[in-house]
Image 1 (tube, one colour):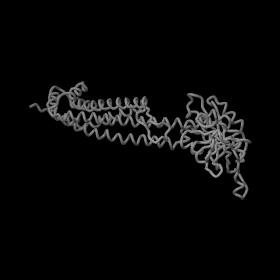
Image 2 (image 1 turned 180 degrees about the vertical axis):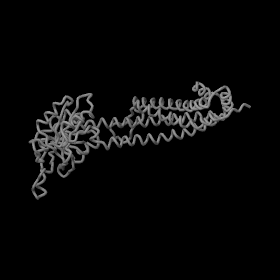
Image 3 (image 1 turned 90 degrees about the horizontal axis):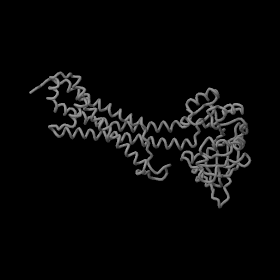
Image 4 (image 1 turned 45 degrees about the vertical axis):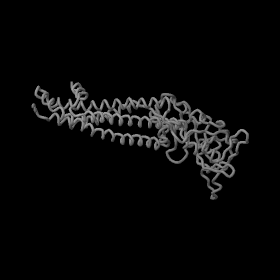
Length: 406
């Protein structure tokens, strides 16, 4: 009944045309704000999915690192126990350290990641090796797969017409007792066989080689590692697995999920997303002032109707609900238009990529978008709450109006 009254009041002709204009302006502003909110959230979702996908290529599902220091001891028996867990698909041991990479006169600092043969099954680096081939070599004849940024910085040549560069790798030795700084460093040679392109952060930072070579250069023990990376079986819950592994390995090890390995990035993305959402909510609040104006003028317009309704037994609560329904109706119409418009724009963007990214340094050349059902629900609820609050004051004034039949 209340919505029936609200609908009739909304479409009925008013004595002052300004009331209709303000009502439609209110609907338009709500639609615009709702559309913008959903579009911005969808773009953030698209970029978040893109970044997570690229980071998933490099970061493993689960990573075990030492609680203190850079390395830890993990016996073959304990490693075997980990690999036999029902949720583990593949497991790889890692020895990682910052190193100086030299190629003639060119040199650059890299994070040298020594990996075993199972690493190819734990990460997606091999699939992202776009130049040359993924090959880590042996302890005696190590080879390197470097990021594309390191390829440029060190002037590495992988052209088949020329002999591949022999690179010099300088690493710190662990537990060196010499007073001579030079004696605490090791120097080894390796050849570059491949270049991976994942994401700028990795491309400019990492080089991958054989774990036995790195351990030998750093004087690490046979059962000493920097990390253990684990790929889980499909449909496994990383958070639950993390708890199980933490109990299994003990307090000397820290177990991280994929997103805990780079919490600062994901936290920053979420903070930016909700900050923009809060700013756009201000547009809805501005639209609320238009709604207050429209409903206040409507209350003045319908004074006689209110008096008639009260004279035939309508209560204050009934009058309040009628005008609250009017405010919610404006909100629902504007919100519905905005959501449909946003979904249409997102569909067009996904289908034809009409809005492009300039610069050519991104993983894609268009704005990625991804609509999530919870975002639609959030935007709709936000709009309706603001509409309800904005409608309350004029509706309350209408409910308190006395009977004036003239």
